[in-house]
Length: 412
Image (tube, rainbow, N blue to C red; front, side, top):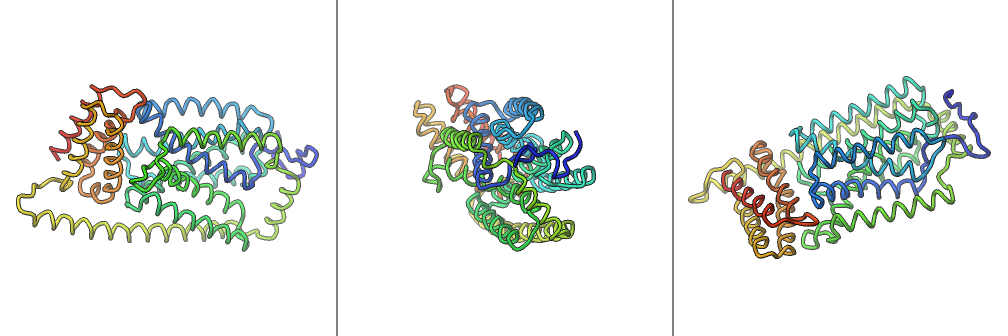
């Protein structure tokens, strides 16, 4: 197949294109998919007790199957396309989670790595195809570049979102508000003349941590500022929303690329030809804002850590440990074990939620003190969460996990 020259490959008023036109429906489903990516991976990893490695293998196999299906289709097919986006959102999340949890790769490194990988993908894509147009995904090569870029955006969005929400302790609510501000800023910049392809990919990246923030809000308990729907119900609701919206798109076709869409892009390229300069300026602004924000937040955390360590040192009889005072986590873990021993799984789940919330919000201050000790405790807590929250929990394995966690906490 010859590369698309915009006026070729017409089918009536439609243009041959393997991906959807960017409409409001696109962004609605994209946010739904990113939220499902977050909650579905949690459901499989924790509630079904698959574990991170097994969940990654299952999702990887499913993604390969749906991508083969996507590449074999002759035109944009909503159900096939969006099935790939859902699975790639889950898999992209798992890629970063594996690097962080299994290989102890710092989120800072993951963020830099996936940013570089995405920029290299775009550079090679443009060098080979002379266009980054999303109205011209009409060859195997362009489609491969497109899906590779999508994978890197999800992995990057996960790494950057977790870096600011968890490692820097901003929380998903604050991170979500920051993301909304960035999306609003780029929407205005697009209206003022910023290249639409550049804006598309920036917003595509940003919707990943936005979806995670929404998922966190919906799944967290009311006591922790959320709606308490849980990963299972949230996944089911959002999956139903995706299916319903995609069904509408399949019937009425509002997102099929038309000749008018292509004419608009050609006009934009002629009117605003300096896309490279815009990319450089945007990349520099992101670099300055991200690095500046990172070091400002790190300074805040350092001051808080020093104050906490000074207070602990001044406390009579305080025990020295690399992570400081962990008595709060021991108390919650013991309460969880007591509930499991009593067969009260509702209370056990409630205590597990408290444990996860407290540990996640302490990460930014505890992890820099001793990463090895923090990782040891974090792994033990993850095991407890999987056992207690399992769809069919087992008393003995939950007891063993909690007793191990108490031992780990007592030895830090």
